[in-house]
Image 1 (cartoon, rainbow, N blue to C red):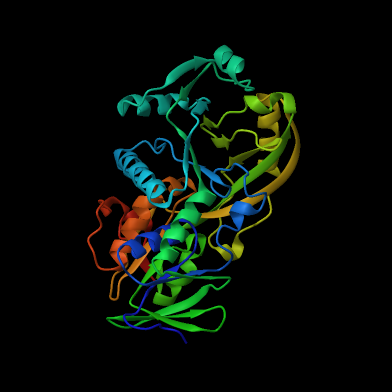
Image 2 (image 1 turned 180 degrees about the vertical axis):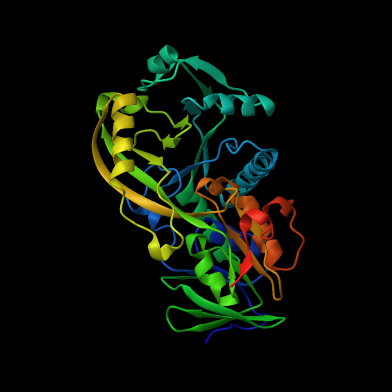
Length: 385
């Protein structure tokens, strides 16, 4: 049993983006905290080499303009960009990199309209212009290039959050998951861990991603979440073409595909759209042959210099009915702040998410408007079971 000395700490469940960001801001507020992570923090970020480019589970994640097409997420993106710059200054760790973003596909016009709405500069390109600058062979006649978009180095971001949090006294316990929790009274939460230990906290930050409903069940609650699968592929590329792969996003009515510049002789790409599962118990970790085949076909059909496939991996994500995330506090005391329902795009919002979770867990009013992200909204489907 462990509670520490003095005021009980905030217990953070999940050592991913949201959990580490919350720990960073809890430390800045002077709050004590313990972070429990079921695996090793950033394990997925290093599965294929610490310097490899990737969207969500590799060292980089796009932080560019919001692609969900609404003012709320665009405002969160702008606020988060300010937060990232502040974190870079505080930790002296470079996190953001502007390298531009090529957008093409039959749904690219939607992005164009969004950029125009928010007065974001971009360059319109036809198929010939795109092919001249990059190794792409687009099937659509037009695309665009947004110069101010870029990448976020996710491994560096997590390192910055952890460095700051640890300096403020936050304890990280890796390889130890929270398997249950309960409110004992208005001031105390008790959690049980996979190592058969018990910890006591003043509040809880629930940032468990695809495992959210497994934990909510201990309070007889459930959100209407589906477990999706993001498929990541690594492909070798011809050395002569390696410098002609930009950061890119292919938009179509059938789904989206992301790609990143070549690094150490290969590129990494991602595509979603796989079958949804009701829970992690039924999540299929192996890549399905249909999506893997479509990814092969797309890359070899639309890009020059792509060679053999090196590796495939699937990452789970939980998504709400409206495909916007939940950022709120659950009913009752002590507070249980919750974040879930993001499909990988949430990493660029980490400063806003982390600060809001820290504020909610310590009884403060969040500095950003979280009403549209409420756990009580119909699309989140919170029910008692």
